[in-house]
Structure formats: structure tokens, C-alpha cells
Length: 271
Image (cartoon, rainbow, N blue to C red; front, top):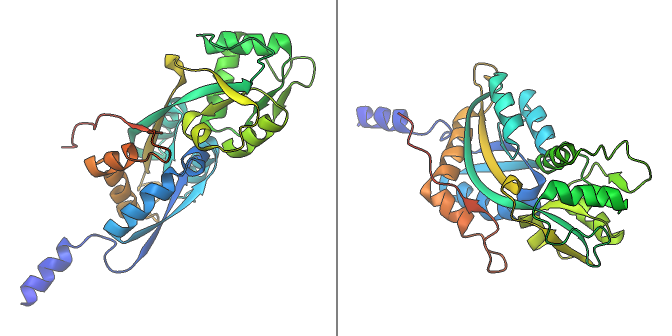
């Protein structure tokens, strides 16, 4: 009997001795869209691990992780993610699911961007018209995607004359509230847009370009650099999100009958 108990103890997960609270640094879009509220209770019921989500912009989430203030991150900026891993902060990065970024704006479309296929051309028209534009301005994945589009458009909105470009330093929901009040153009992820109730006179005007695909990844942190973090629990969450069950939960999140996030194909199993 003693041998059986010993072997059961050895086989138990690393967190089995007591309830664990895992700190997840995440983007605001997975919070504001309701996705985390749909996923995390399922994982907690299955694993016994409580997850505390700290929702900030991608840049801030990666900064929290670099300081060891969270145990893993769920973010959406490939370039920043790869740089984070290359710098030794991250041990493993997995792409999980995606949605789309949209350019939304006033229904009367003063910049004339409706239906424009190239989002950079659409931003050029916004700048030329000096039409109000609400930028998150928070170093989030969406904000960084917006800045890349301005760069490709050949426009420096911060240096442009007038006060049409407004950097808010806010999350997606707060930025949309401001855009609806002005009204103004804004770049938004489709999940937050579809669940946002205060659209006012705003409508989706530009969508569908390949560069507007918005991929979310989970990154496990480097245990050699941050040995005090909950690495076993973090891996359990990452594994669940990447599993068939986790991907099905993402695909099944349809608050208004429409999928807001789309799982990517599962990567090959680790050796």
C-alpha cells in the first residue's frame, strides 16, 4: 500500500498539493469580448487551477512578463512576441487562434474609405481629410498594427497638423466609446467590435486584407530566468488552450451566434 501511495504522489501534477492561482497577462480584447470569461472557468473546473487575468495592452503584458509579474502571457503581436523569446524571456510560443482587425468609422464616412481594399490607403484618406481618428495609444497589439499601417501609408499622424489624431492610452472598449462619441475612425478587433453595444453612428468600413489578420499566441516564460513562477500551472493552461478541447471551446464561443475567434490548426506534438 505504501508503494502505491508513493507512486500516486509521484504521478500527481505539480500543483496538486493545494489550490494555485496563476497570473495570466492578457490583451484587453480577449477580456472585453468575453472570451476569457468563457474559457477560464472551464479550465479551472478541469484542473483546479484558478487563473487571475491581468488585461493590458500586448506591450504592457510582455513588460509584466519580463519582470516576472505574471506567469505566462496571451498576446497578439508576432514581431514583439518573437523578440521577447529571442531576448530570453520566453521559453515557448504557440499560436492559438485569430480574428480580424477592422477599420470602423462614422456612417457618413467623411474620408471616403468605405470598401477600400488596402487599409494603408484608407488611413491615407483619413489623414488627407483630417477626419478624427481615435488611436488606442497604449502599445497594444492593435496599436502596433495601426502604427505599421500608418508607416506603410507614409503618414506620421503624430506630426501631422491639426488635432484630428487622438492617442488615448486606453483599452479597446474605452477607445471605441470615445470613437462613438466624437465620432471618429478607429482600428478595432472584430471580437470586441461584435460584442460592443455602444456603436452609435460607427460602422465597419474596411476589412478583409491579409495584413489585418490578428493572431493570438500564448508564451511560456523561461524558468531559468524566472525560477519562482508557476511554470507547471502555466504549462497546464497553455497545453489546454492548444488542445482539441481548448480549441473547441474557442470556436464554440458565439455570444450572438457568430464565432468571434477562429482556432488555428494544432501544431505537431512536442517530442
